[in-house]
Length: 211
Image: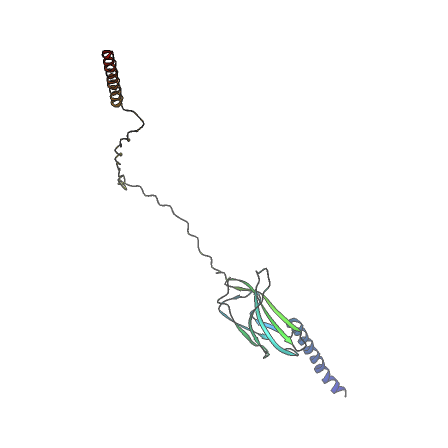
């Protein structure tokens, strides 16, 4: 009896240690989890997302991503399935059309009672990988060239002479009285007056003769 008890004791202790280890692992990892990619990883191209979506009362799971720098948290669906996955590929995430930045990845599993569980991986860098070898900086060397002869003229200035326009005589103002016309009118007026004077003189002379 004692011998049986001594043999069973190490097995019992080992069983307790295994249960405790599994409990600690479940607390660290959770019933659902994203195994790859890991937080802080640099990604590019088509990324294989692996993990576990199996949970009690499983209905279906969704794998989504969001941009960390966005002021509004909007999740974009990558893949959904009603087939649970255990330590396998959850989806293939095509990152070729995404802008460079930091992203988050979320696995959400829905249960029969309407509840759901999430596992989120943060700080996934897309297009932000840095080349570890810095580009050498080459100092600029100034080169001074001293000409041996004076440089030829680049161009000859061309002087264009524009002829001044020929002045055009202004038309005669009809209101202005010309000097010749003044003299003509004066002579004509004198002749008219002299004719009138002779005419009336003849009339007076003939009347005086009749008396």
